[in-house]
Length: 130
Image 1 (cartoon, rainbow, N blue to C red):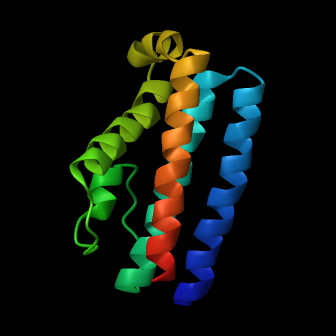
Image 2: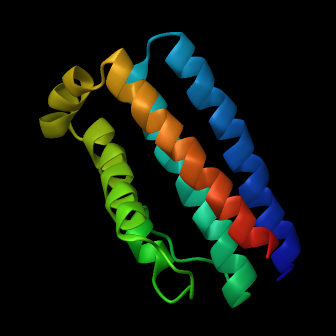
């Protein structure tokens, strides 16, 4: 397995998704913006996983699960944020949660969390470069 190639594929895909999230925000598709934001973080974590473990990451959408055994220091704030961002994946997909998630995703809420997603994404990129 060419770890660097696969790691770069994850990172390139994350960058494309980040642009998509920005576009969705500009077009007031706030719930989908945060859903795609989740994918940005998931893909960055999978790239970091490949770098640190030299194997393919597990097939999961659970961001906290992806951080296990990576030997990175997460603050309590980052753990809470990753848990919340993981919820965006579930809430945007399943009918029982979809309507309430859509209503939660106001412009202000989405702007705040998209900013947090970008912040933790930049932090993850720094972890990959180390």
